[in-house]
Length: 622
Image (cartoon, rainbow, N blue to C red; front, side, top):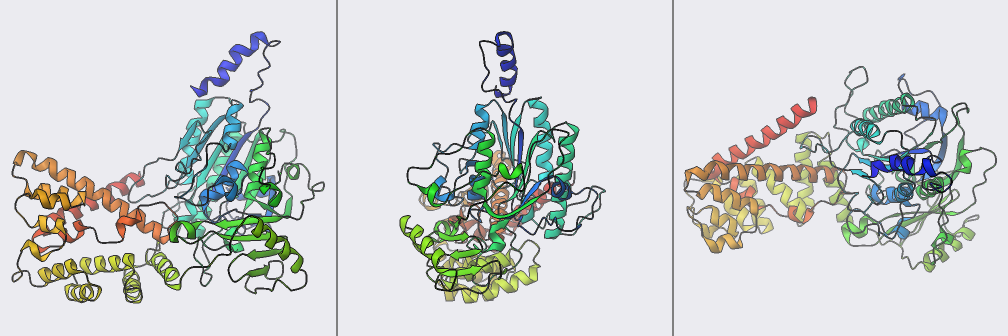
């Protein structure tokens, strides 16, 4: 229905031009395209030299035809809060979006998409990542919010190139209407995804290869806009949501790191222009933030925010960048504090939000043990300064007053064991890690963090998979896991061990060893997948056998797919809102299928999983 708005405007406005002003017409507003990319740090788009060897480089086009902001900073290394800043012009503490699971944007906060929609501009959002952005309420104002795609065990994201094809189809639907479109591109997170050049040549599985793929996709995108006569009248924004995780910083996790390598991002804006205007290609080196990008978009659609009643806009002011898009010489950016935060530790580890404030060249990391860096002379930010040092004390006093006025407390940090766990899980499930290396890493990690539930569970599963029953028995005894001991004993000496149900403590395991249903045990078994298998095993009606088998296998493949998602989430150090509580202990189905008498069912389940993987691969190749 909303696609009819431009048609209806013509029908009702044209005959009665003197009586109808058509104030909501979109004709005076440019098209806007925002591409918000994970991992696109400040160094990923280098305009200072000819490093784009391809003749089809989107980066090269943007370097020549856009305004580049060399010191742009995200508001959070978590993509959701950062993208919220782009869509609202607000810092996370103003929008309320601090993480990917425990917070969301209130409906009272007006998004840029809502401003565009009010002007009869077609609005669309195309996401290539996990369907978490709708949960953050970022769909406000988008007529199309496309965050569902051909999800499969082998493809956990939609490449930007595929989102571009969906956009191409959508453009045909909206006709000549103006549009505001946002793309969320997680491509650079997935270095195990095979890509190829426009000439069909396969690339290596590296971060650089994914960057090359994004570069070519941007070029194809720009060519599409030019062919449809939309390039000149489109404001095109390429913005990083965070920097890449390429270099480890000791003691830091990916999403607790507020140093420049994770917070300084690429930002290039090609403003809408008249066809005969010369291309813009100047740079600004003043500090800007993703909230400034949001304020710029708000101004494009005719609205800027008035200061909040709590004066938070006065404490951390945001500025529209529109004047910087008009002239390189008439804009003076004021000296002001730039706020960065990460809500990951409060969300995932129940601690507190970590803050950092950048003021000119100084970075203040607001920890219990204050860290201060001069990024101008210490680009890697390795030498912490004292607040009493010359040229620092006055700024520190202002920042200290800001923190006090907002009642923000210094971050206490994370226990060493917690950091070890998340780094270990990330290394373990790194997207291109060799299986042997993963096994060795897991064994070392398990013995260092024996009481950590997730590590304990993964190591136990690994021993079951390798059928290392003696080691499993020893491990289970040392960690007090009675059912695992029984599993190890039954597999180590299957001919001499009893199948007595009372050997197990878990009700699902007890029920699986019966040849008939026990309502009491079934009620206490809280694993639906185990119950589906038991229904199939204990079924006496042959006419229902095939249906029960299919029901179990569908559920099993779904469970394994969710496991795959969780493993990738661990590789990325847990940014997605997945149901991790169910993954801290071995689920009963894994134990049931590891019993000697269940080998037939285990093989059937594994075959179904392999078929699902092959089907996904075939679909991907097509």
